[in-house]
Length: 196
Image (cartoon, rainbow, N blue to C red):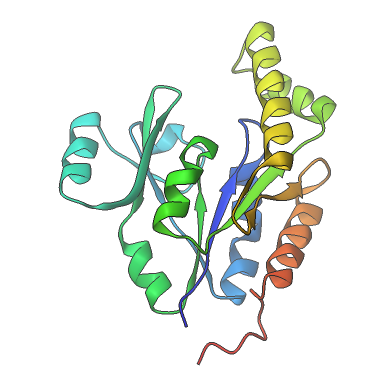
């Protein structure tokens, strides 16, 4: 029995990294491995458990087939190591911090993947973006507009029998983690699953 790829998406400020980190030990209890992303910037600047590499190294890794998936966003290159395919084939689940734009290609490679979109109330997202102080007010408005489009697109998106699941992260992290675990359990990913 092969494992399931959980493809987590969400706009900047939605709290993807925070949810993943807060859920890490609970995910391990239900045999979900969190894949580390490889990103073309310093690991100290990433804000997640990622590997920072230079553009030349990233290009060499891509050419050598070291990525199961890779994409570009916000001027950076992102990759997920090819080792996830072996984990999945071995019956283990894998969660990746993915890109909404790359979802159709991810589905081609992993047709059984479970797409999950982190959603956040617009007012909550605005406050989070303001408090981190990285964007101008105009950039924050652009991110909020993108968030609204992303949520609207996700509610209408369906590929065959695959549809995007929504995970609300407007409240505290503990609630988001519980909602994530409940969502996974609805899809048969839980501690009582027989992996033999």
